[in-house]
Image (cartoon, rainbow, N blue to C red):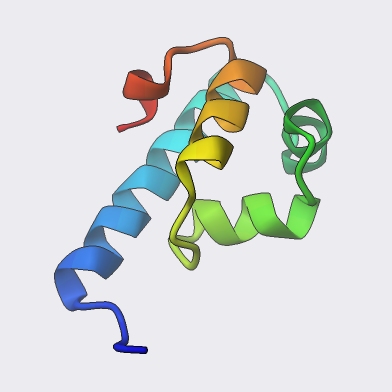
Length: 74
């Protein structure tokens, strides 16, 4: 499997920063967001650091837990 390009890393990092921004604005910890989204806390941390290629299903879970549309995360 090919590794991610620098552009893909940058996209993942930008997505993660947006998730973190919205989580902090909502006054949620990573653990609280993970619980509300039905995800593991360590996964949320990896998303926020841009270490994960997030699936569409998990984008929807995170958006719902944050009270925003999936498009607001992109």
